Length: 119
Image 1: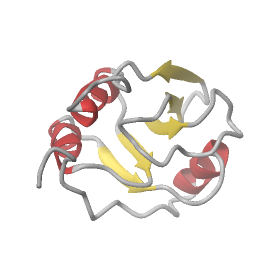
Image 2 (image 1 turned 30 degrees about the horizontal axis):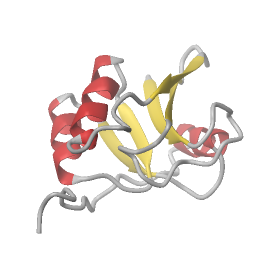
Image 3 (image 1 turned 90 degrees about the horizontal axis):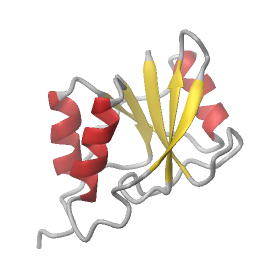
Image 4 (image 1 turned 60 degrees about the vertical axis):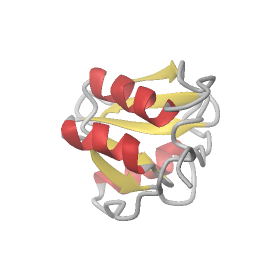
């Protein structure tokens, strides 16, 4: 299974980036093969709808689980339509979160914030 995590740096020791849509990079990790790659987040410079754009990129890469501290409603709708489950990240590095995910210790994210464009 492919999982994605917003990353501060292109390193497995990087922290999970706090803002899903505005993360500079995304780790795409295959839990079966243990192969991974870092994607530059092309949506980070978007004036609006960055969450929607990055969610489509995540879905297009065959990801089935996203690990993130928080996520917006619009982004979640795209992820849900692509059958991507959204998990709450744990404190620690990308590798720590992968380990927690594999050990089934992460919980599904159950709170999604409205987009910043809403009042």
